[in-house]
Length: 203
Image (tube, one colour):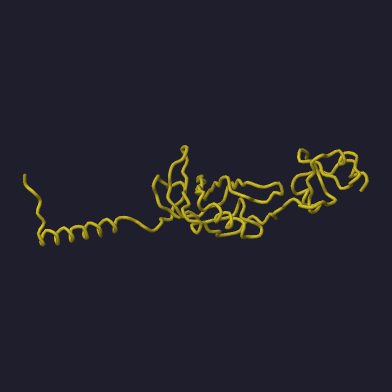
């Protein structure tokens, strides 16, 4: 049985060959993200995308405070859709970015995202490995943030109704077992509630 014997010349040659092949590989491998439109994406691309938030689905607590992000869908001028996947290990940092502006980042805002493309349920999805790879480019949606009051106010409703009341002795409002309170009457209206007919007649 013959054995492979490496002498000094063979070792040097092998090292040089590895360096040359390594340089050739690095010259053809793009480590910087490529700026692309959503319609031009392919599975495995490492890209930088500038797009509008088409849908931002969030988790909220009982006071409508944002506690997490369910899903994000982006759309650019090519009208292509792109899902944004945020791994659990950076979800808290990512939530801070969404909430750091006043009002918070919302649908319609323009953002820049960097990451690798993969296909998920037949749709393109960008995997966000670092929260710093998500950046607000332009604030477009200035619709104010509305939260429910944590203390009792003059404006209240039932959790299961779209009617609000502004009199504590309203015969309809007094029957409510679980009440939610609004900080202002404007908040109730902006959240889609209508004033109770009894309270309206008393105003």
